[in-house]
Amino acid sequence: MVFHTLAGKVVTGLPRQAVIVGAKGLVRRGRTSKPSSTTDMIRQVLTDALEESNLSTRDLEGLIAVPSLQENHFMEAHYQATSLDLFSTSIEEDRPLRCKTIDTGGAGPVSAVLEAQRMIQHEGLECVAVVAADCVGSMDSTSFLAKADEIFLKHGKLPSPAIPNGYDRVTKYQMETFGLTRDQLRMVVCLQSFHAGKHKDSLFYHKEKGKAYSSLLEVKESPSVTPNISLMECARRADGAACLILSSNRYLKRRGLYEKGMVTVIGTGESSGPLFPPEVMNETPFSCEEAMVYAYEAAGNLTADDIDFFGLYDCFPICLVRALEASGLCSKGTAGDYIESQYTRMMKAMGDGKEDQLLEDPDFFPVNTHGGLLCYGAPWEVPAMYHIIEAIHQLRGNAHGRQIENCRRALVYANGGIFSASAVAIFAKSL
Ligand code: CAA
Image 1 (cartoon, rainbow, N blue to C red):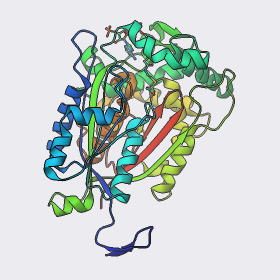
Image 2: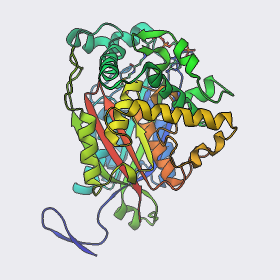
Image 3: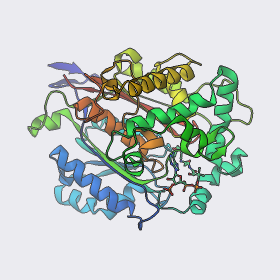
């Protein structure tokens, strides 16, 4: 095959694509045990992901990391590469290692996938690792809030806890403007817990052993954090880490590791907004909507109908509500009704003893089948990695017990700050 690069160069062979060959994560509640260091956790997930890829640290040409709130290192990717002794390996191999830290908050992991894809497609790197780790679950409440509130209290004029209060502003706006109800927001937790209850690694699975899901009543009775957000509607603080290994399809072919059906990145989009919402909300453009448009376009003008799994950031229910609308799963202002109809479908199936058949229903909530930030666990900037890992499980067909039938394409949206950064990536199985 002959094709032209943007620079007009004629190249023969396979068009260069970024393939995800390794994806591993771990999540822990924290609190009770002594926290592991982020480096120890990254060592573990990097080793596991490389093993899954049939590659080693000797193949790595790039390391992209996102910052940690608890440890807060200068130049995170350089710090981790140095601590893991990756530079010695790169010198031995005469293979330079490019390190980059990406700071778009919770959107970081998806921004990092975009960057890894760019390095592979346009700069000729063959193998890039994306890593993220944090221990916010191990922090006591005062230390966590002191760090999490820092910027928002001063500049955003938000009371503590600043992040939930910032999201409350948007929640209130959405309720007043589109008639979204408090119960519809709570139903997000019920739906997410249903999925998390089927994932053996999720915090919900471990804490609520034997429970099928969190009931609406439980969410209703959970203590208020802000006027429109309760404790169970907050991203569930946790310790954790994750690693993705991306490699070029050509490198994999040369190494005899390439197979049809591997997961590739087929479209990406990014956008930004202010660091916190205005005191009086208005219908300003939402960065998630923009990022979705770019990603769908880049993936060949796809629409929501072409996507089988949606990994949508859900640090608070309002985030998921806005992402459902931006992704096109439902139209603007209708996410509340969409959630309620999904909740009703879930309750009916459970009442009929048919909950195991829910995932065979092509219209049942194809969102966050691992449980999302609300129920799987949320180690600060790590959680979007779990959305990506779940997307990969779904595409590979190994999301045991929660597999969406015939999953061909997956979309992951991640959000940083208080709707301040949006990054979207669309994945598909290679042909
Ligand atoms: N579901 C069920 N239980 C939950 C829960 C949830 N979603 N969230 C917390 N809990 C549980 C905890 O596990 C804990 O129980 P155990 O002690 O048995 O484990 C209990 O409720 C109390 O939780 P905390 O220790 O967290 O309670 P706290 O009083 O110290 O703090 C809080 C309460 C202020 C609401 C705090 O939990 C909080 O700030 N949560 C939000 C975290 C957050 O803002 N994350 C970032 C989201 S924004 C984002 O992701 C974008 C980005 O750019 C980073």
